[in-house]
Length: 76
Image 1 (cartoon, rainbow, N blue to C red):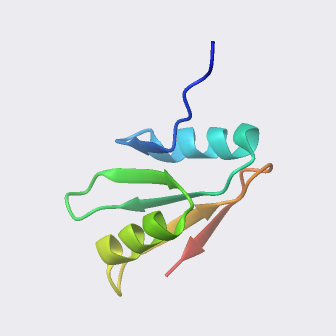
Image 2 (spheres, rainbow, N blue to C red):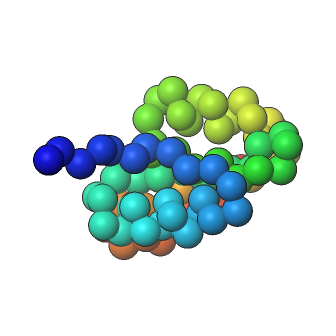
């Protein structure tokens, strides 16, 4: 049976789930807090990066979680 690919998480545990997915899934993840205060996590793609930058604005902060090691980097 084929596994379903998970490419997004939202809610309070989004950062932890994204870190776990990055470590074991070998893909970079991006995490941000949207305008409603809910954490969003998505696999990095051009569309998801644009969504993140539009949601956080110029004063916002987002996190890039690197693949294979799960280390987070802060972006502004």
